[in-house]
Every structure is written in structure tokens, then in C-alpha cells.
Amino acid sequence: MKNIFLSNKEILEYQKNRFPYLMIDVAETIVPGKSSKGFKNLTANDWFFKCHFPGDPNMPGLLQIEAIVQMASLIILTLPNNKGKVMYLSKLSKSLFKKKVLIGDKLDISAELKSFKRGVGSFYGKAMVRKKKVSEADFELILPDEIEKYKLS
Image 1 (tube, rainbow, N blue to C red):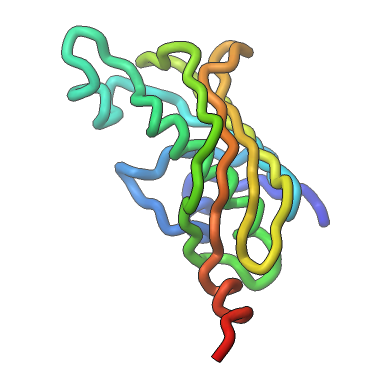
Image 2 (image 1 turned 180 degrees about the vertical axis):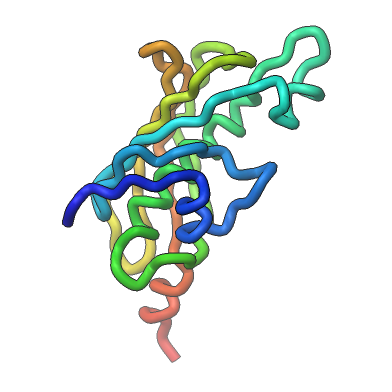
């Protein structure tokens, strides 16, 4: 399968998150069923900087994880017949936050698929700023449409 590039508008065709909760600006390289890389440019207009925290604005760690999760979902949603389906986070483990992410930073996001069986995907993802890791996590995403195929009647 060839690599896929998705602009912000094209990302909306593949997954359900919308402004202001879409945490990806561009998916630069997606290898369906394997990996994805992209970024979010952080600006003073991002809603979370106003409340997290006054006098010390930074991107909440769980929103960093959300960006990683959204990037990871594209690994599955770009596979044939998955475009526009819903994926849910079902498990988060080994998350780590190393550094503040600030207004003006470019959050480089990458994810890789470790396994995908019967609608359950296991992933590793990380976020970097200026080539330094700021957060990472191991997690599982589920694709309910695929899980439904394996339910016993």
C-alpha cells in the first residue's frame, strides 16, 4: 500500500473529531496498517491555552495523548472500507509526560500499530517538540464495526 498524505480538510473525511477537538493539522505520512506521522502547530488561539493555566499556558498532557490517538486512528481508518468509521480509545498504559508544550510549538506526532485483531488495535505513539520527546503512550483503540463481526448471536 502506498503512503498517504492528508491535509486538515482531508483528515475530516477519515475520522470524526472536529474543531475545536481535532488535534491534528496535517498527516504527512500514513502507511495504512502500519504507521502515521504528522503535526499540530500550536497557537494562542487554541482553546485550552486560555484555561490551562492562566499565567502559565501549556497544552494539557491528555490532549497531547489525544493528538497521538487521533494520529494512530488514521493507520486503521485509511485501510479499505474504514474511511469515516468511529474508533474509540479503550486502554491507555505507560503514558509519560516529559516537557511542557507551549504556544508557538510544533507538536510532531507519530504512531505505530503493534497489532490489530478482531477490531482491537494495539499502538505506541509519541509527540516531539524540536526533536525532543514531550509525551508518549501505549494504548488500544477499538473499531466497533469490526468487533461487531465477531459477536456471537
